[in-house]
Image 1 (tube, rainbow, N blue to C red):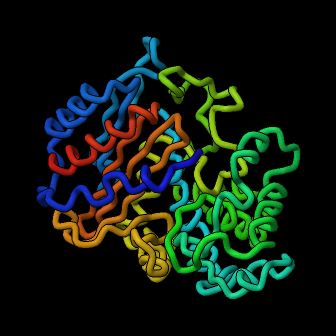
Image 2: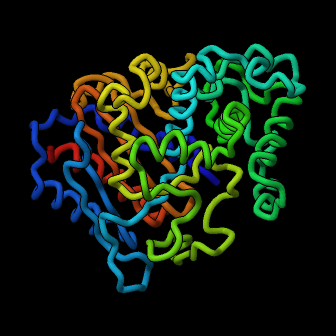
Length: 364
């Protein structure tokens, strides 16, 4: 399963009392924070990063690529981002808006004119989908049975996603429109919309519109393969060739991206530099403003954490996990800093990452 609402929200309100930091990161203090979180966590590996407006200020990594192995992880290794992929999918749609190929406020009937849908869906705006307030539920088309069989689905990924969106929209909303209900279905649907607009598989659209223009060279989908860390389930390393090393790839827009920390910093820089010339400031504002009135306030792939003294204003945060990896990210635009913690073991990595993030913030 992808990140649950409980996992996603863990730590989302836990940083309010932390003080603001100095202008420059104190490397020894950051190393100490990483050492402490790693020692307490019992994870195979834990890594962290502090990002400034010009890129990574500090990165660090501890542990091994797989439990029982001797090969150490490095700061250049690739980490699975889980549901932190959602912010990338939302930003990709925003880039299409800037290109005049999509629009804010566009309804599902306008975006998918050739899809038969229940009348309740026709006037739902894309922002409601991004904000998990459209009324979509994973149980409609992406429940346990689908998860058990989807990896063997022979159709191309865009065809699979289109079939899922048709199933989702053919029936009335399972949830209450306007009420926050976290569901990967929202971003699978958004990915299918992107595929219809671009004529590309979501993966190829990501490569063309996100990875290439931002200079991301290590970005990929599914578990990192080759000479890279392995994710862990119940303490055991899972080979990237194992069909169960990630969720079904049709879930891609909701959370299958992986990349190095340095490349992830290139994406986070968009939120520290007013769009970084990759998207317009106006689109950035949409992506970072809560969409709807749900709780927690959710924007384009981010929880919006208001009133964070340490951040000098609101912060953006999200956690991601495919149950074998874990990633936690906080972005403080007014502070000009982002903080990242990642692990190759979700069960133990979740508390380890939640220990590391506050330590990094205290250390700046």
